[in-house]
Length: 273
Image 1 (spheres, rainbow, N blue to C red):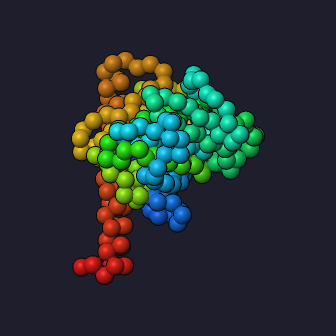
Image 2 (cartoon, rainbow, N blue to C red):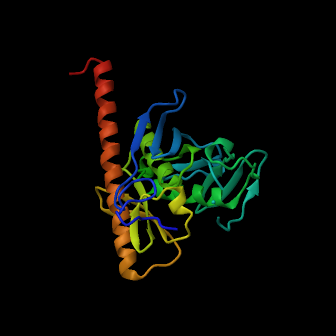
Image 3 (spheres, rainbow, N blue to C red):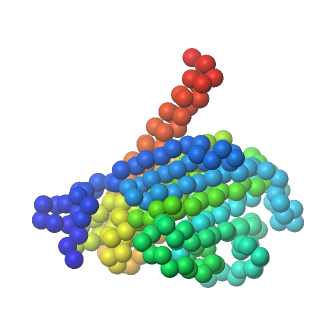
């Protein structure tokens, strides 16, 4: 299948180095401390943050840092960890931190209407990856003996759901006023038909080619997430990874615009000049 035509256009009409349209909204869940909707093309994700608050399980509380729980409701993902089952969720212990993962298959998020069993390993893997990515920016030492719950649900999936979840969670954390050393942003890039492609959609992502997902702290110039499917030559990998990093920086610029606009709206409501 030809994913880039002779005119240099992809199946959805974008150029190889062109991102899908970004859309975001803050404060969409009134009961949450922070919330956001983030869209990358046809991929749509909602995130809600609760906390920081006192840890529910005191025996697993850390005295010197916050406990971050990441709860993901999404498409299926894969990882080998020992899990202990509870009535409606899974509890996983890792490095002294409790991660509680609630997941349910949203039948309307994809064209596949088949119900999938709860507890799939892919959802567990995504929960862990995003939790670790978010912990890289949260200043947990400022919130001892507390926990932060981050709920994310994929409402519509068209590729890049992992990156969209990270971007939505970043906005929700900022909306909740959680102290962070920097914003975490994420984007993916792939390599099809001998061409590096930025921000893969579902058709491109399902093609079976190499796919690199990157998460960065843009101001600190640090990489917090790097995952790759398949293999690439070193020079090609460097080009694809750099393309994904440029996509992360574009997302960071957009998120800052959203946060600035939200701040101006809050100041206007409060009569601050």
